[in-house]
Amino acid sequence: MVRVENLTKIYEMENGPVTALRGVSLHLPAGSFVALLGKSGCGKTTLLRLIAGLESPSEGEVFCSAPRANVGYVFQEARLMPWLSVADNIRFAEWSGRERETLGDLEGILRTLGLSEFAGAFPHELSGGMAQRVALGRTLFCKPHLILMDEPFGALDWFTRKALQGDLLRLWQEGGKTVLFVTHDIDEALLLADHVVVLREGEVIDRFQVERPHPRNSAELYSLRERILFSIEGV
Image (cartoon, rainbow, N blue to C red; front, side, top):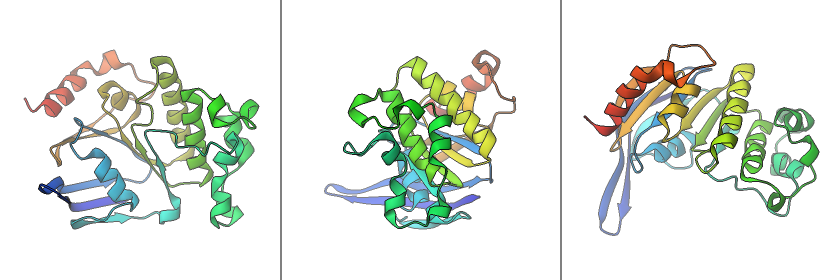
């Protein structure tokens, strides 16, 4: 469970202070899949980084029932170690001092993500989609209770993106993890998440619940899609 209360983040810039978030309150129930939507610069990544503990808030608090060691973060880019193989990139946490029993099953993760045949390959030999699978595997290896994802599929082609969306949805449904997913794509948010939160200029403007069961058809959600679009645009 994650609870954000009255969160404000102000950056001191050369030309004066910039408010990235203003009085944001948010609740993520355990096991939920929540999508954050909004235009570029609205504060989505800042909120993710504050929840992850990568930055400190100017005001407000973040309460997270999962220890920091059980919070996984998937970035926009795969950020793999170029000198390590696929398998070693996934099991990178073994060298961070964590006890082996707190980590996941490498072979199982490779199999689940369709990477078993590429365990010995290096990042320069991978497609963009495969690299993102490795990045997701690296997060799963740490057995996270909470997964924070910052537009992880934004740079991928449509077919690869759809495949990875399916992988993520299956992993969430099977593992009972809590996911907070940042995206610019309304259709992606509606196909994956059960709750959609809209940010505009650093504030939470709207919250929407997606009540249809998985798998979903975006055509069935046209009315909700239009409501979210109006919310983002401020009309």
